[in-house]
Image (cartoon, rainbow, N blue to C red; front, top):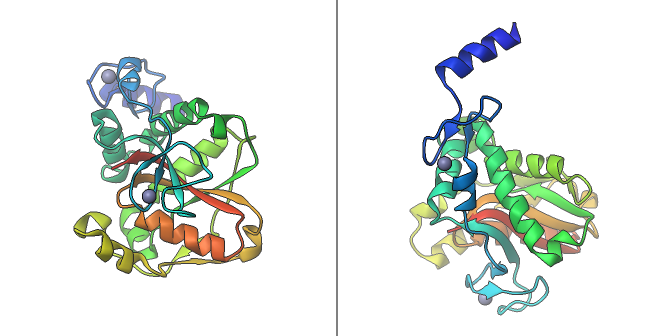
Length: 237
Ligand SMILES: [Zn+2]
Ligand SMILES: [Zn+2]
């Protein structure tokens, strides 16, 4: 029965590349990228300072001493990455999670600091429960879970550890950085601190704009006793 339904779905909506509309093999996920379009997603070199956005070449030091560092796989200006993120967030196409995870894996494999170490913890940046109800799922959670499934030796996944206590307006609705910082302050709480004590944590999000969200979530985890906290995002805007 399942296969009949799958056959009908494939016949009516053959999988196609979200960027160039090329037909994909029927084994492909519904929303995906063809190999050529995946190759067009540039993989970033290095990391980003979450305060000023400057490029960093180490996970240890930042231009703003001690500021959280974000590992960003690609740029949000890239059309293919943007189409995938839109499909996931605004069209609810959960299968877009897989090519987004693939972009993250390509980046991780290219960075020695990430590829040669393991024992990291992934925590998704949570949505406030009101926004979670509206969207029906947390895109960051889908990406974090999928990355853990693809690289289980490198990344464990912790769920329900971090809570978003305030429903803050979308980052893009706020024009200036001081507004964003004020807006995010104290917006997260750690539900169970003993889960994070002494751990090296990567906070997963789809996109980072000003860095304020990840920085504030990271602060909550550090205060709860995490050893180190970094951001891990598909795209830096
Ligand atoms: Zn394509
Ligand atoms: Zn900086």
